[in-house]
Image (cartoon, rainbow, N blue to C red; front, side, top):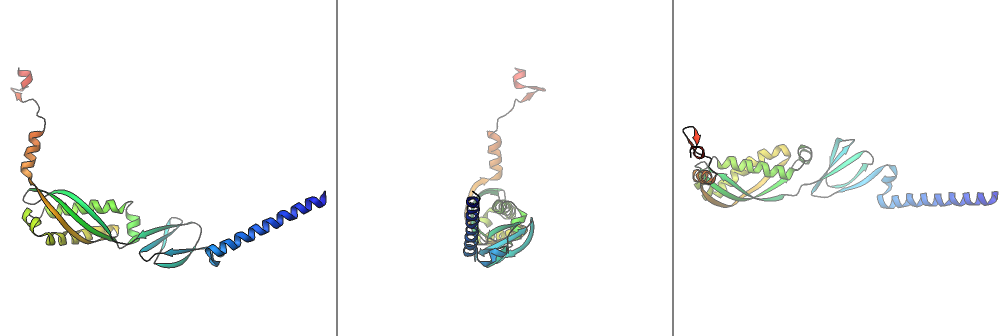
Length: 214
């Protein structure tokens, strides 16, 4: 009986040794020799920047290439630095009080990955919101005719202003192209139409409403 138990124990030990050896060899083949010393192999693509955080704090940014990163208590954020294109439609008012509908295309790019990652939860929404504010402010300084006839000058002005606004979120406005400008009419006429379409309350007569007076 004792010999049987000893044989079983020896068999279990041999199986454990074989399993451990296989796990060691598998890790060696899959991750390389550095994995045995607590390092992971990380590959960063040419168009990426990899942000490395350790225990919740920024450690360093990894450029494109192959890197060895110590495993454990680390977080990685991959930032795609390729340009992005946004196509937006926006209603606005010119300085001479014409209501306009604009269609434009914007090309942006991340230039400071860490600032983009840490400053906002959704940088795309932030870009759209800030861009519309810039376009609105720029239209308030230009007449309808200036916006309609000189798309290039308007686009250059918006592009420069947007780049300055985007810096705080680590982005840059590469190009701004005004595709279409539609005139909805003078803003005063539109306000009058809206006011006419709004429901009217009882007109007071002698301090009482018309209904009360009747």
